[in-house]
Length: 342
Picture 1: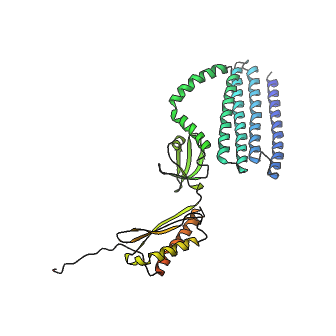
Picture 2: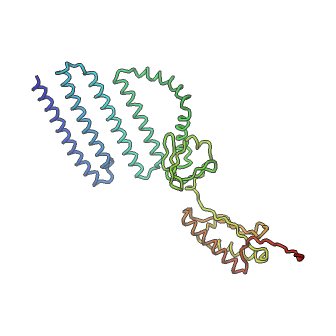
Picture 3: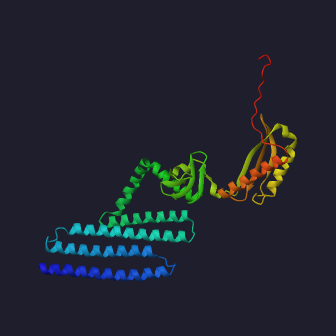
């Protein structure tokens, strides 16, 4: 009996090794094909993951078969139930992992095809939830738990869970509002005047949105927050605004007219300034120490670095126009009187 058991174990191991070699051969062939053909759906990472999972699946079958043989011939079937349950659990976990790999591969594939990353991410998350729910229900049915009872309990449990986790549910529905209203997408630069929030959106999850601030720190914001605050999407601006106040000395009041006219002409002739938007250069205030001129114009570019270069050039040219007209910038002057009696 012992030699018969050893022979069956050896046969099971040989069969597992043979299937493992077959999968290895297929993996090398398919991996080589996917490397040559860039349009192949799977890709090397996906093929490698499938190969590892199938190999693990074969060895799980082989090991459970060997354990079942030992149980039947040595322990007379005392652990058959436990072995069967372990086998089902491992197979279910491997199946879930395989489906998750498929979803992840499809997600990366569509992102590479320049589909909207936020929408693809949401759909992939929904697919994962569906997979988990279906697998859990199938597992319960496999283990003899009536699905109808689970669904009935889920109705009552859902109400209790709703009261206990209302913040989590508000975040869950908040992510749907983000995807429906589309105030921002992954990669956008956003800012909130209501909260200290400013940075690039890196990830939109079920509960949190990850934002990389301008000083490169990660900021995690609950999704429900976005339904109660105003959000500025700086990545969707059409122009950047050049707005500044120039202070001129009071004694140069007669030169203000020519200064404002020349600065306005300089802006109108600047190819980087959007002439479709209003260009304003006017004297607007008699200050305590100066005559205040404001400049208001819009650049064509929204790139921040290029905008800073354009704005610097405008300011330097404006100062040159002021000096050319014999005027100068103002600064605070304090007058004091000294008594002659001292």
